[in-house]
Length: 96
Image 1 (spheres, rainbow, N blue to C red):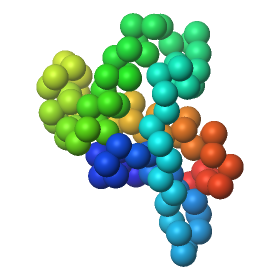
Image 2: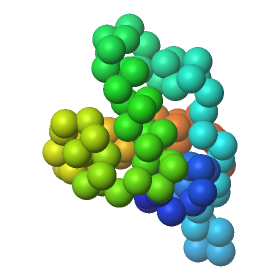
Image 3: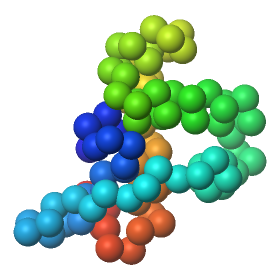
């Protein structure tokens, strides 16, 4: 799944061949912070939020990596972790 392709919505796999994904709204900042809790420093949550918002706006891994001084792989990892966390909130999806 990829945040960049769905116009600001978050794609989640459903496990259903007829409807393989469901699109959900990008979480609010409060919900987003709740995903990570106190285990992740506030500065890191701010950076993750900015990276993910850039991806939702359509920036590529390379563009985001350059803007935030991280590797493309790190951007991909942050996005993948976020997608796993969002998926846990939606019962119509199952982990792939």
